[in-house]
Image 1 (tube, rainbow, N blue to C red):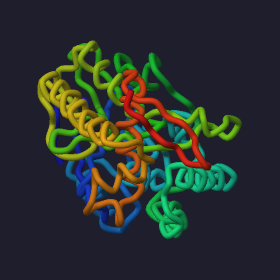
Image 2: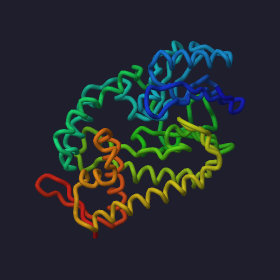
Image 3: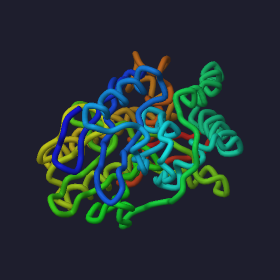
Image 4: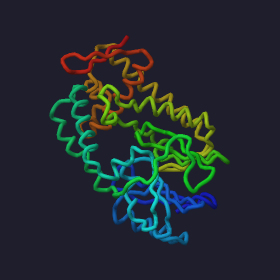
Length: 322
C-alpha cells in the first residue's frame, strides 16, 4: 500500500503471471472507486482486503469499479464489492467480463485465419485452445457505463479519460488535469515496454480491417508527450516521473527493431512467421502469440512508413522490401 496523495492510493496484489504484481488504485471523490481489480485468486483477494483495512476501508465501502483494460490481471475481482453497482470501462471490456461466447468464438476464429495467413504451421494450432484459459482468473459482470476519449470519470471531477489503445483494444488511461498525473494501466511501464497485442476487428468487419496496435501504441505514447503528462501511476512496477524521455526512448527502440526486420526483408521476401523465427529464435515456440504480435506490429509500422509492401500468394502473406 502506498498513499500517493489525499485522493489516491496504490494497492499492490500478487498475480500468477510472469508480469508479477499488479497495482490497484483507490480513488476518493464523490464516489469511492477502485481503478482496476487485480486477478481472481485467493491470495490477491486477501492481500487487497488487508491493504484496504489498513486505510480504514472494507470491500463493502467500494462504490464504483473503473477499468483500464480487459486483461485478466486487471479485472479479476470486479464481482467482489457488494456496493459497487457501477462498473465503467471502454466498451471492448464488456465481452470479456460477460463471457460473451459469440465474441470468444469470433476471437478464436480470427487467430485461426491469421495464423494460417501468416504462414504459421498447423503444429501451433493447439495454442488456440488455450486462448480462453485466462478467463479462469477473471471476475464476471457487466459494464454499467461505457467511457472513452474526452469523457470525465464519473464521480471524479477533473479526471479526464484518455484513449491509449495499443496494448489492448480496450485500453484507457485517466489524466488528472490539475497536475498532469496519469493512471496509465499498462500503457507506460518503467521496467518493460508494453507489448502491442493483436486482436480481431469487430465481428461485423473482415480480417483486412484488423486493428494495428503498434501504430496505435506509438500514436498514444506521443499523445502522452503532447498532453505533458508529468507522472504515471502504472499497472505494474515503479511510478514513472517525467516520462517524456522514457517515451522517446521507447519510440526510438521500436524504430530500431523495425529496421532489423527491414534488413531481413532486403535479403529475401518472407512470411510473418519466417520473420518471427529469426527475430525471436528462442521464444517463438513457447510464446507464439506474443512474438507474432511483435513481428506483425513491426511489419505494420514499416508498411505505414512506405518501406515495405505485402502480397497474398498461395494463401500466405508475403512481405517485400521496397
